[in-house]
Length: 504
Ligand SMILES: [Zn+2]
Picture 1 (spheres, helix red, strand yellow):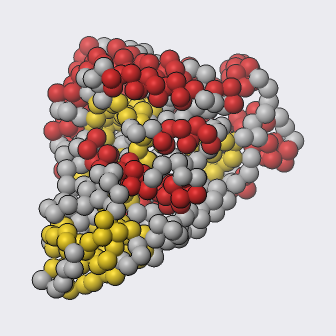
Picture 2 (cartoon, rainbow, N blue to C red; picture 1 turned 30 degrees about the vertical axis):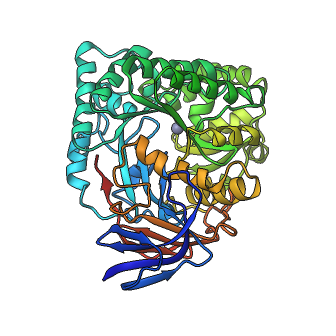
């Protein structure tokens, strides 16, 4: 007697092969049998007319940050994600900063994993350790190179993480304090990662004017260490740089032709989402958590503003939409140009006022990419799909990628625009990330694999979430099964906590 049989579906197994018709039987959280006409189960799902695939793998997630606070992770399962790779862009839930007084379970990645590994979650989470978090734990947010002793301590953090089941390390080279690391430091750490066959993922140093140089730096690190490398949310920002991704994807191809192993991931939107300060305050003013202090001093305020006016070629910040701002709820969902008009000041003055008033707690969507580039990256055979999101913001105004990335790729980019075939896209969402991140047991519909399964209507699946209302659920997602248990029906999470931290 099986626990569950999924009958009559079109199976796309994750390998990149087109569909075949068969039933899938599940027992004890594993796929027990795939064959025509299976019978004898406690529960039957009739998948006639529906497509059955491995559960989606969110290749670029920040949901590790909310494992403890929002373990349901409903935003993940409700878009078909059964495993997320968290700890991206240089920041992970552990280790905590050097200056944290009561470190508790966040002392290092080992103490965190040992404490949280059996906690039930709504969806699975694999962990990268963030290089920025490690640097912050060892040397705070100081803008300098590490001493030999500090570098050794950073390596030790990395070893502890890998020995406790992390799948790799991430860089966040535009964020404080990862931005202060030179290439040598990155290479030294990547070499340690290579000893554990860990994956190295990078939010590279620049995604606009210096994009090509930034990709080149990352390829240098990959070549120096021999690790598998992934460029995060690959994109080229601002009109004058659109099209450069064709060049950088060729750089990836060339490195792979030499025998290295490089990938990228992408989300299906033309707006990014991150902290306002990372865009409009130059690097040197971030050191020692100094953004607000520097903005409050008239002379440094002037320098910061002049530098950004020069960089932008003027005062136009109408392409920035505020989605999170401490102390200013009235600005959510508004463009900086609208806020500036409301307050009777220039765009830049309004933006810096937001930073000061919110104590540098202001996140925005930045409309700076073009559709053609998104499609170019998505089409690349080594591109995976990632949400670039944490979970449970309890917000209406937010980047819709939080809730709708995977249905949007399937409905808009595959069905409507025919960017690639459905079975190729399913490979990018399942077996490819499972293989790249060493997620053993995931990403493939085969006997013996984990029973993490998505069932959807390929003719109907579509995103509904928008920047102004990110809570609209997708359509066409019939069932999501995690560890053999139905967790989502018609895009609604039912509270089943069948996931946990994935340990390598
Ligand atoms: Zn990032």
